Image (cartoon, rainbow, N blue to C red; front, top):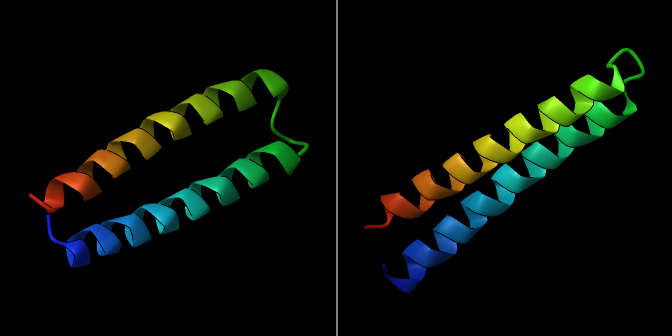
Length: 61
């Protein structure tokens, strides 16, 4: 992976993390979401974040 590809990948990952963070804020501040569901939603976001990072990093190969 070249320096430019690494820089692009890091930028993409930062954008993805920002989007996921916004979803987390929404989940945590929406009073209509029960606490037990919040945990499940955060776990789903964790899985999606890991998968998205893997996809971004695999594009560079």
